[in-house]
Image (cartoon, rainbow, N blue to C red; front, side):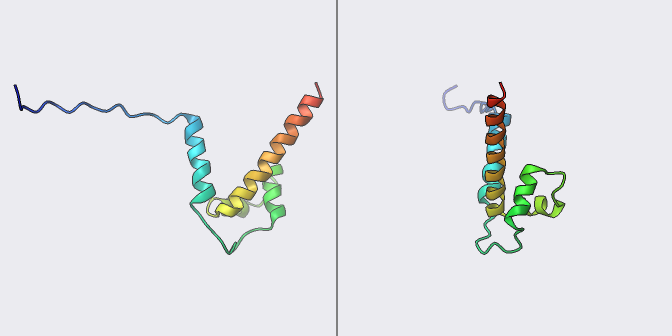
Amino acid sequence: MPGARSKPRKRKKKLLSEENLLALGRKHFATDFPNPNRQGCPPKNALQLLADNPRKADDSVLNHISFCSPCYRDYSRFLNARKTKRRAKSKRGR
């Protein structure tokens, strides 16, 4: 019938892949919690320890990076440096 409304088509929801979800989470923690004065931030060596040996790190440091983007970014850099170093070692060991 002309002019009659038809049922709206259901949109297929695009599911986030695990990779996209993780990228979204990384972006969220890296940008959505500014702390320009670095209030309450742990020392850099505490972030380094969290990246190098999380079991030995203080739980408060892990808690802090969940709401402080600058510290999260520092931690991420330490973690990426560690991963890069491990990859280089494994390639040399072949």
